[in-house]
Image (cartoon, rainbow, N blue to C red; front, side):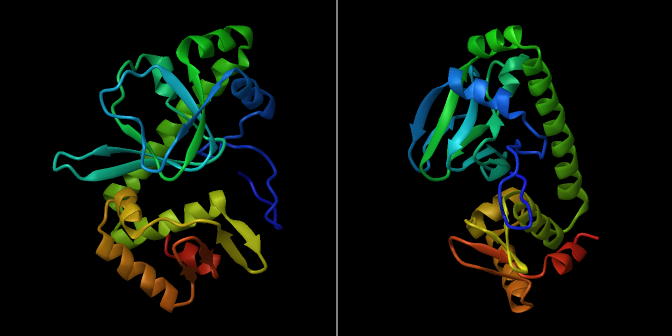
Length: 230
């Protein structure tokens, strides 16, 4: 979502900051079925048939892969209003990653044929999904660059910064994110280790740039946090 200075939601956006017209989003939701997934339940796994597209109604979804050594590497995190699984529209018949419910999750689920019907009815749908794929490719390239060329501290601070920008609410001089991730999850997303994540988060907390518990992340000095990224 996009937030104003008071933390009020202004528009629905997808997971890479690209504005999704509310009219199109509502059309997709109206044609979809709703499915519920319990905590840690797999929505799809590597090798599953790619036959659906999803929109998050409630909760948080993690998408990732397994390395050759069996380690989990998180690729994306999806929140309310985010669209995922759209690669099925463009020739991918088998999933090459997994998607998992982080907690209790409700999803709008659309079969491929239904989405193709919507595209025929409204050509803006084709542009929506085309732009979404393009945005995700750009984001993947940027993230790969960070993983390859930046150190652990930069990657972890970059995760916190983007989380605050995308999901935070302005509360006085602070920015609050109304949920936080485990150190293991941050390590999986930044390709570091839980121990390194703990060390860096504790240092940022000692320097009074952030505070956190299991549920809430608070950024006290966003400008100083941003300096870590330059």
